[in-house]
Length: 205
Image 1 (tube, rainbow, N blue to C red):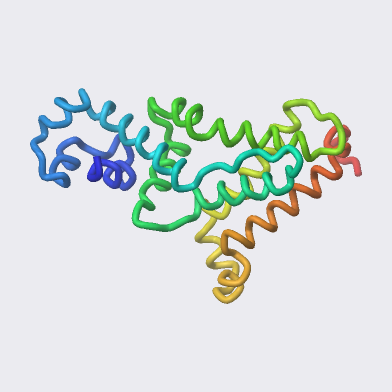
Image 2 (cartoon, rainbow, N blue to C red):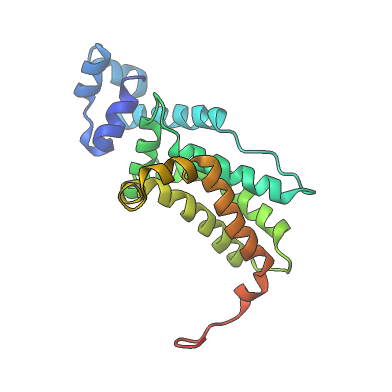
């Protein structure tokens, strides 16, 4: 299991081979069939363990219905931490990014088990923050806007390094600073939520 995760992250599910994984683990190639059935069975178990490990390492906050702003910033911080934290198990984030770009047969279960709980909590927290009644799809748009801002600092990391001087990155692009900024942007959107229901005509002001 410990050998399979990094290989899947580096090669992708399609590119990784049972032979390479078993070689890295110093076990007989028949071990995969014996314990997991096949490569897909092994991959499913890797994803399952990855989900549990990351949920434990970067837990979602409890929703404070009386303090939704605090909850929202904690959710943003969790999203950024899951995406940007670099550590010994950095392969986990790389593997999840591969799934987003090239979904495998386990992608739906990843979304349901790993992404949906945080997304639903984010949507409900936004519902507590807006100053007017909004339809579900508008709240979902706000939630995706929040996730998108967090995600950019992962997928656009190389561009950020080129565009922003190192000293500024050190001062203003850490997880805490990004969390404060994204939270402020989304709170401003929530405070002007009525604008989200106005129809904008093409070419109009």
